[in-house]
Image (cartoon, rainbow, N blue to C red; front, side):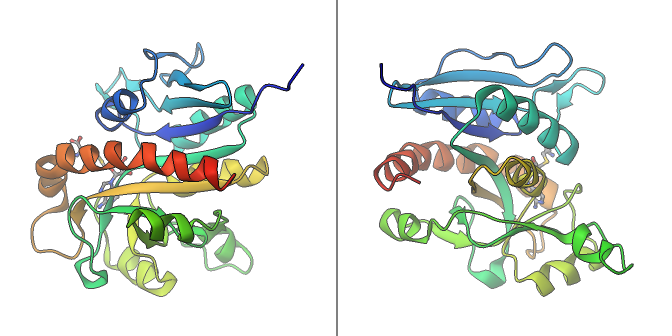
Length: 242
Ligand code: SAH
């Protein structure tokens, strides 16, 4: 009997990001991932390329999506221990930088390690521990074939960017900024599962308009671009057996 193919695990923070992606990939309806977590899981794909999409779910206390690194790590851990995926993809939205040529709706694939920009611990080895620097699979050939951008992803638990964050981001050479990527990449590295991120730009962090306003204005457009790009990314990943 042939072995069941291991699934690809796609993790997305917000339901507004996940719903159009689930539709584009013809996935089932969301089910609870775990009795004590708000996270959800949808499954689909084909027998040779099964796919599970998890979201971090809804925080009922604050009536918002459970974004950020804590739910990201917990959701990734529970989903990955249950599914033993062959690959973990953290998809969603991110801030980009005008100075690095980003435009709203650009879809980026991760390049190089994922770092944190808000964990500053200048105490010997705690300093690089804070930065993290978790590996990603090299998908530069896929980005070139699909006409997607490549960028180093940096994660922090704030939507805004403090001056210290900005210095850290410039020093690491990062060009996309989110609130989950490094947390998911950390879990993937603990479990020795290959990891990539796919992020669509909702806002330009170095533009004069407030980031939160840009995010709300551009969310639908950026998510539509993400949902359009992901099926092609999956095809390429299957073909290149990443
Ligand atoms: N204000 C939004 C809240 C979403 S916060 C709302 O009202 O719905 C931003 C989410 O998108 C996070 O999950 C994060 O990963 C991503 N994101 C988009 N732009 C970002 C940026 N400039 N900095 C950090 N995260 C960003």
